[in-house]
Length: 137
Image (cartoon, rainbow, N blue to C red; front, side, top):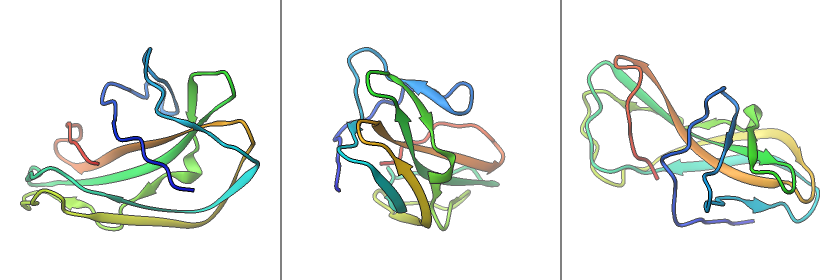
């Protein structure tokens, strides 16, 4: 299965650590057409040109989130959180479209037919500053 959404929403926040809803008019998701088991996730991210602050490492990730049919409230599936293998390192200049990748094989996460699925992209940081805004795609 291949899916592309062609757009993103930077305005979605996960306030309690695991759930979120799309704003009115946004529906960045698809419906699982059959019962399935997600066995592995392979991902890559690219960036705009930037230099992270010295002392900071940035670990982009993707994860799956699900919502029951008819619901707009999604819950992250923690077992699907897939980080890049190597982070962006503070003080290093990265040209636009630097590709980082990661994988998470052998996860065996069941998804039921009719479940709404969203592919979530985010990042975690270490060092200082701990919070910032970055754009990856």
